[in-house]
Amino acid sequence: MKFWQTLLIYLISALFLLVYRHEITDWMMYSRPPYPLMFLITLGFLLIPVVPFKIIIGLLGYLYGPLFGAVFSWAAASIASILVYWAVRFYFQKQGRSLLGKYKRLEKWSVMLEKNPFLTILLARLIPIFPQAIVNIYPAFLSIRFLTFATASTLGKIPAILVFSYLGKSMFTDLNTTLLVVGLYGIFLLLVYIVYRLWLKNRLV
Image (tube, rainbow, N blue to C red; front, top):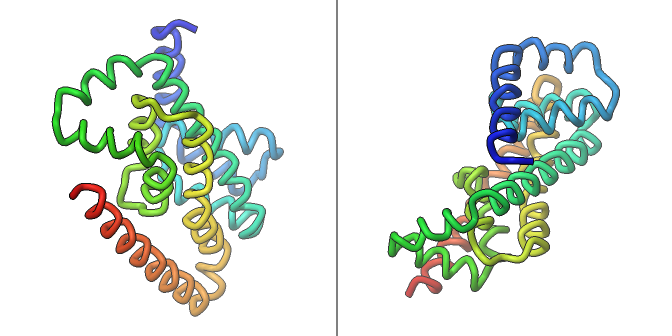
């Protein structure tokens, strides 16, 4: 499919989801559409983020239970990441790599990412301060194998999705457990961030 055709389809879909996002999420909540349709809607909200995906994860956790809701969300999120990666690589890799090469700091990051792609992508997924869209797009500009990106990306999504899926089910029914889960997740993120800073310091020296 040509670029302009893809862009037009994306813009029309984005406008539709933006205008009807509240109606669609209400319908997901109260009508419980069949799994294939629910999956396609979830995938749409991932590719066109007019609703924060954490809310969608919580909604699916509430509807399907923490475990199945998490698996459902993880599968959709993984496929969406792969689709974005391939779209960027197909349409923009040469332009993106050329642009990154014009900035010394970005070029330094690019070299580091190409040398340690799995761990870098995994840590970027685990630390939610990194915009996930950038984690999808940036590696697509570089000479990173698809399997490496897909494996690190999908594994890195698991902890956050499990937490938000559980919160979607327990937030309004078990406050003490909810607070415990949030606290443990906060500690986990702090440890991951410390590991990331130490690793980054060694790499940039």
